[in-house]
Image 1 (cartoon, one colour):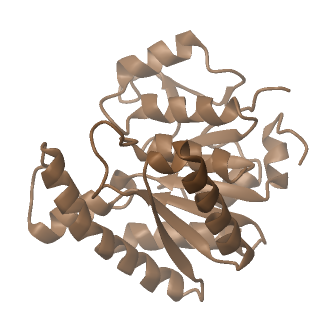
Image 2: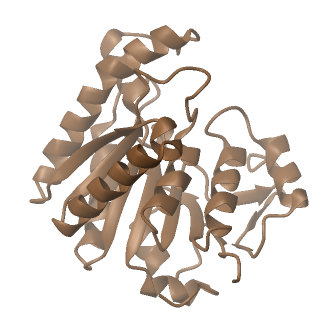
Length: 266
């Protein structure tokens, strides 16, 4: 595929990795919000029906587990987080299976860890499995294998995981869906903050501005880092709001939504 140099070039993408975060799938009590999940699935299927290949990197297991266990606060201890994720992952996949199934779409669960990207044999197995699923028309739904990851070897964030997935499957585009409209220079909650529509290169100025307004794992800073990772590998990235109407189709139609990161020139 010809390199993406503008919004209109997004119309040509064939293989897309879409990452969706916990806040975009859960309610204020951390329970999976089926209405939000259904909206996301509808967006994915609108693109899938155009003949494009899609892989989904989905957060939400810990949030779903917290809801089922009646927890109001996210545990801090790793072993507790892993146990909550073990409860929630099944709920998350069951929900996806039901809603995608209503569209006649088969999905597959893939749980990955950092080791899958550094061990050559495991990396090859991941790539081969993903390629086979796409060949069969199946949508892989990917999450970090939180129940076995350790502090030393965990990815720590699905934004970063999605970047490695996009590189591994040689995607044309990585879409990072969030609860904000894109990358802002300044705090998006404050008046006067402006959204950046196009980033040709992730500069230290952008990273500093985003870092100051970002909080913790899954904040805008990690999304920008994920975008930098894929653009350096020749893959375009878009950060956009999952709540926007028909957001994925609008992105690949070349509309001015979200923040587009152009891939590095060869």
